[in-house]
Amino acid sequence: MRQPRLSTVVERRLLVNYRVDPGIAASLLPAPLRPQQVGGWAVAGICLIRLGQIRPAWVPHGPGLRSENVPVAVDTSGVLAGRALAQISGTCVLDTTGQAYCWGNDDNGELGNGRDATFSDVPMRVLGRHLFTWISDGGEDVCAIDTTARAWCWGNNDSGQLGNGHVSDDSVIPAAVDTGGILAGRPITRIAAGGSGACAVSHGHLYCWGYNADGQLGDGTTTSSDVPVAVAPRR
Image (tube, rainbow, N blue to C red):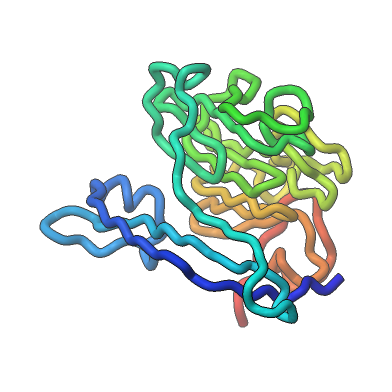
């Protein structure tokens, strides 16, 4: 179904810059996206925008909705009390011990807390004894790398995006990405969940799984895969 084209007016813009330890910036971003350094610090920023008169493009000026991306503090009085945080992706975080927490929508079990409730407006602890070094929130699914360099995903699986060899079986707790095939013996160093698919890096090579009707997996086919496949090199 074609989505309607929207029209809006930018009512307010505010850019806030701050400095970040260069080592932390380098660990979170690939080289082409790392921020500029000034005086030995990486420079990062947050852009706050308020949009007004959000409406279908065919509707006359005047009526419409308003949206503003003003940040609010995440609740730290519950499971995050006293926890130092190491990484955030979407609405999931890792603390410095490697424990994962998520909040927000849970229609497909993407909170990883053992049930597919409607939502949670406070952080929930992801179940299991896994300790993670990296996490990626894809919206309807989440993927992470544990301390043994193994990949885990949970949440929606209607296109095989959990990579565990099954389709349509959502997982409300972390499920191991298949390592019996092309990933056998390969440590995962980075992973990115993307809603209908996911990709991971091992030894500098890229592997993907999930929906592939438009060639998203990059393996030279349009066949979806519920296990990792190698991204084909460009010829």
